[in-house]
Amino acid sequence: MKLTLGFSPCPNDTFIFDAMIHHKIDTEGLTFDVLYEDVESLNHKTFDGALDISKLSFHAYAYALEKYVLLDAGSALGFGVGPLLICKKKELVHQVLQGRKEQGDSDLKVAIPGRYTTANFLLGLALPQLQNKEILVFSEIEPALLNEQVDLGLIIHENRFTYQEKGLHKVIDLGDFWEKETGSPIPLGGIVIKRDIPDDIKKKVNRILRRSVEYAFAHPNDGIDFIRQHAQEMSEEVMYKHIELYVNKYSFDLEQEGRRAVQVMFEKAQQLNLIPRIEKKLFLS
View 1 (cartoon, rainbow, N blue to C red):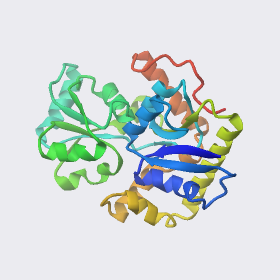
View 2: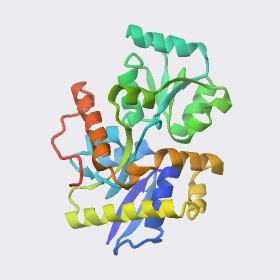
View 3: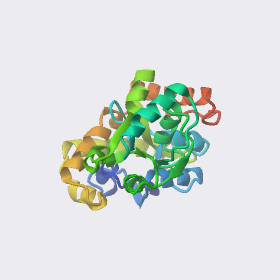
């Protein structure tokens, strides 16, 4: 049986999916047609039901629940892994944080990596006064800041390791904000599968994905060529920092702690009317 699979070309995704799509492990008779897209593109593809299996932002999952259910394996959660809001002009750090206290609207323009990203959801929780947003592909946000096309930038992925080298400044770590608010790890992205796929296939995919994560941890250098192929001009050091940050115990299995973190996010979002009412079960079983 062949299934369509979409995931981001970022190092953590290529790391965990390498063994699965290249048949380095037992895939129990399944094969995969792979699509590589940035996470916001994948979010929209799940809204359309275009893929059998897909990576998506947890924020976007609220809008894809009718068609998809979350697998226990493959998720990106953790402490100290959140998106960062950054700026070029250092004086904006105080201005933004002061505006947070005063809760006044701001006309500062902020570049975000997508409306449905978890990063944008967290920005809305922490700094609701920032409403003047421009959507850019995540890799275009730093250049937009450096060229002063925008005042602030919301960065994800590997950019959190390199922004200081470019003379940019951190305004707030939204992961740190979330952790202080909830005491939970921050849910960033998960792997979902179509609800109308038979249950035995859903469980098979979950087993295969967990096996792929286990293989990646047991053979961390085995997929380096595949990871580098999709990592643009990223150094090997940054690639592995990225993987160490986003691939952890929750990538093997959400378990009770990971599931609670996802539920807390959805409950808080519903209380603030940031997402639709949840009427489907969130988890595979």
